[in-house]
Amino acid sequence: MLKALLLALLAPLRGILRLLLALLILFEEWGWAPLARLMARLGQLPVLRQLEAWIGRLPPPAALAVLLLPTLLLLPVKLLALWLIGIGRAGLGLLVIVVVKLIGTAIVARLFQLTRPALLRMAWFAKLYQRWSLWKAGLLAWVRRSAAWRWARAFKLRLRLAWRRVG
Image (tube, rainbow, N blue to C red; front, side):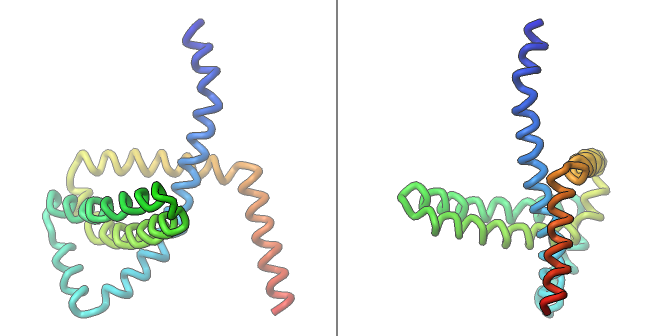
């Protein structure tokens, strides 16, 4: 009885959390591919080409360390952004967070492309990656079935058609 009541009370929170996670994943999905392409173009520079080749040859544990490195390096910058917000410089703090998020996503997207073959040779990573991929696909399918998603897609299409008529 108590468990059922608790689950009923937590159901709206679970829905809100699911929606927030879906929005975060959608942001990552929309940004991931273009940012990875941008970083791949930058990777054509001779020095970066050599670095990328070296990263691509790393053994699995080193590949994991290289993938996690940007997260650790960007943490102090994110803390700086929170400090800026705390001292009343909210606009600057939010700008720092957005810029760091874009840069971090671009770097991690490219690093993941380079290290994924090595990472997938680790059984525990391959299992977690498969689970994550299935969970993410289900969450994105849930979002795409929603009325809000269908409305946004139709609105985007109407805007695109209107823009073509004007241009």
